[in-house]
Length: 530
Image (cartoon, helix red, strand yellow):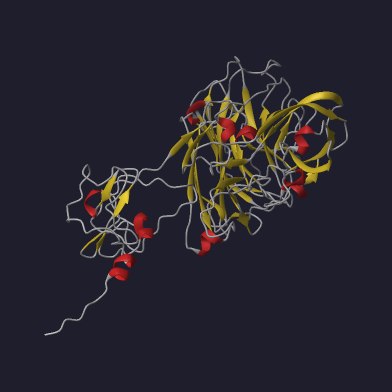
């Protein structure tokens, strides 16, 4: 009987059997043919049944699905080495900031931990803080009284350290000033959010002039973008403790830079994938603010050192002229929600939390704001609840002690309740005040209020207090006592502003070192921003 001879040499070459046949043996961690080599099976992959194996150079052995490898009946390629299948245990997943983990099923965990970051050291100019916020002190600035243009050396304009939208503070600079535009490589202009409609971007705010002339004055620039994308060397997380100092302008946030995790550097990519981001801000600062109206377009001169150069800056937004985006029960004033003096009296709680969540167009809306000064139910009922430190005293009746700068009463509103509670008693032996409305904002301390209307105090017959059913002025020496009036007050056709005024002539002219009240006002109407 004849035999058909088959030449298998080419097959051997094709499937890697060019050398002599070796006896099969089990591959273990320490008896591989070479310390750094898998068995001699070139151009093929070691298989046991349909389970794929591969040699891990970092571990010095062939991995199987039993010791962390990627093998399963569903894997077929070496590119599947980053795949985890049912029955496998994941102890760590190290990935870049732009990595994504997707699942089409339920993610079930006994506990999910979120990263907490902290730069709450009470000082804006520290190594830690500068990883999360922009900050600059420039000692080369020249101001001119009556002019909104500030000149300086060109260094910090050309290197992108001065940015449009930064809060500007210093001698001769009015409160609430921001960088508005670049006039040249050696000058910039300042503007203000006071009186601006909600959502106004910094480059469109009204000009504001310097109040003094000086040469080489030091101005301080405070950034309002929080960098959580790792671009400044900081860590990434979903919770962050913030305390850059006691003043609100050091702790103002208008946007948050997040890592790009979409398929392109587009802010709409996340929404297209059905993804949302929630960030919790835990403010340990005494005063802080959220701004609606930040824009990073043309933020720096020549687009150098832009905030969005590495990540996507998601801004805090609102809509319909008064509302937070997609409705939230919080109201802006001068495009800001501004918390004041939370370290004083009963308001000192360690930290106050604000929660932001991306919605709709992928920018942030406010979903929670602890102790927000202005809140609402629907669009008709509004509530003001804020703490106010009383900084000034005067011996003349109805002179201004303090204006509440973070709230107002809109035109055509109806006030139904006014309440004041002493949260820290005054150090002055006699210190009495009342609450008044005025259509004029900005009246200075110790000056007479302009056309004031008293809404709580001895001048309002239906004012009750803890100690008396008869109308009395608010006595700042009675810590914890309450004054309340439920009269209906009709506000006229103009916006009204709230003042704490000196009551009577017995306060003297020495300013207090401590005194504060918590003020609560209910009113009905449409909150406007004009």
